Structures are given as structure tokens and as C-alpha cells.
Image 1 (cartoon, rainbow, N blue to C red):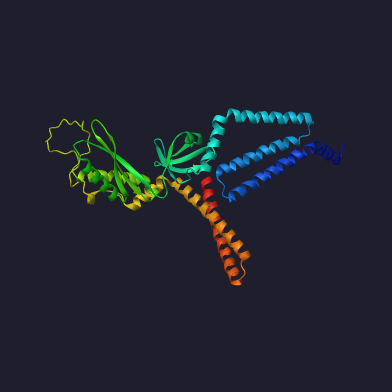
Image 2: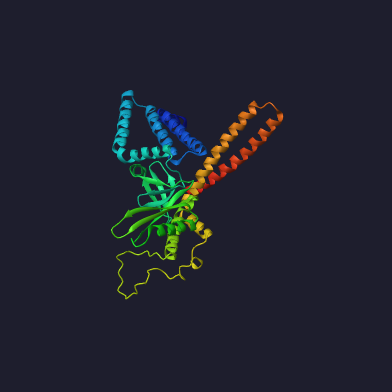
Length: 361
């Protein structure tokens, strides 16, 4: 009978040819784990992690084939087959998968937008929630999230609201019996009453039955874009009615017997600004935050990452200045500043990790 030692030798004999494959598998698993940790600390975007991980896995597969206990001819055939499969996958999915991936890289490199930005894509309007390798997620006012393929965004024109301030607008069509000077004055006052700056009126079109006006005003706080448009429309109603200007289609028909002096608008008592049930500024901010909660968190995370990189650069500058400093007092000051920056950096990293873990959950 075979002894335990002989059995172990037989088992080792079967396993030893695959030792290189097992070793390669363990090494590349460790590399993937370490790489993901490093990439996460370096604040790379999610799609960058996916690309790096995919490349490491692909490289590990090819190296694993090289360690297989087979002849060189068989190894070459396996590598050729893998190359054909990879080429076929890339060729078959080039119009969709690879197209979206390349579009995602283009959008990221061009920095067309970032998480937290307001964006308009055709009829969709919302805030960027997440910018991935294949899709871009936009959170709309109903708090729902819409996934746009990156290839679709490249092919379509989209509008990104400027963070430093953007002109918002609202149209209204009025009859030719209304003087355009009076209308423009009322609309400018409406924009001013909403806190908008540099208001002006643009006549968009002269239709058969009406004149189309559009009022513009500069909004400083881009996060209030949605509520500001609603406020502007409310103010347009109030100011036009206060000036006795009807907002009604010339083809308006009503079967009731009406006096010739009758005007189709609320009475002056019901349209008084003092009696308007408008929301307070605090309530509007709460609505904006609830509507775009995910996008707001994404914007905060993006800002924290930028602050983290700024701290890293500042710390490197302080270290370089410390090396070239000659006075002891200057070195002490720089040492104290470096320690303070290190604490800030650690706290900010903890905050970033907490937000990312919450996002993943």
C-alpha cells in the first residue's frame, strides 16, 4: 500500500505543472486589489477604475496561458484563439460598447460637464449625477435618474448651465394690439422682481396671430435654475396683468355674454403680490435639494476631490520650500503648516471615503 508520503508526492506531481498558473492567478488578484485601492486614493473616476481593472484582467489571462503545461504549438494556438475572440468582441461591439466607451473618454477629457452641473438634452433637463465610461446619469426634477449612453450625448447637442451664472428665459405670445414698448417694460420688471440681473426682452417671432416675446435675466446661483424659471413665469403673469395686458390667444372663444371692456385676467385683488402664496427662499432651496439630492451629493464629492488634490499640491510645495529654506524659523513654520495640511488631508480623505461608501451602498 502507498504511504501518505507517496500519496502526497503523487498529488504534488499532478499539481506542480499548474503551479505557475496558480501563482499567476494569485499575483494578479493581489495586483487588482492593490490597484483599486491606489486608484481610489488617487481620486480617479469610476470608469478609469473599470478600464484599469479590465486591462489587468486581460493581461493576466494572456500570462496565464503562457504558464500552461502544454506544448509551444498548443500555447500558440490558444493565444491565437484568444486574440481572435478579443478582436471579434471588439469588432461586434464597436458600434455600441466601444463607441460608448470612446465617447465617455472624449467627454471626460474635454470636461464638457461634471457631476452636479445642470444639463439640457433635447426635452430632458436635470443635473449630472454620475459620469461613467458607458453612460451618463442625469437626475431630473422628479428625483428619477435617466441614463444617457455617452455615444448619444456625443451625437446630440446639449446645453450645460454655466456655474458662474447663466441667463434664464421664458417666452410669452401676445396679440398685436399690445404695444411692444409696454410689454418689454413689464417683462423687464418681472425679471428684476425675481432677482435676475441685466434683464432684456427679445422678440422671437411675428406670427399671424401673435408676437412671441422672450425675456432673459442673469441668474447668479446656478443651483436654483429650476425654481428660478418658475418664479420668472409667475412674475411675468403678475407684471403683465398689473399693466392691464391680457395673456390670451386672439382665437379665444367664450360662449358667455361678456362686456366689451371685460379683460381675461385675475382681478387686481387676487393678483396682489402681497397675497401671493409664493414659497419662501428657504422652501425653494429645500425643494431643489430634494429634487436633485443625488446630483447634489455627486457635486459635493467632486468638489471634495478637487480640494483634496489642491491640498496635495500645496503640501508638495511646502515640502519643496522647506528643503530650500535656510532660516530655522522658516523651517519650523513650514513644518507646522505641513502637519496642519496633513490633518486636513486625512479628514478630507475620510469624508470622501464615507460619501463613496454611502454611494456604493
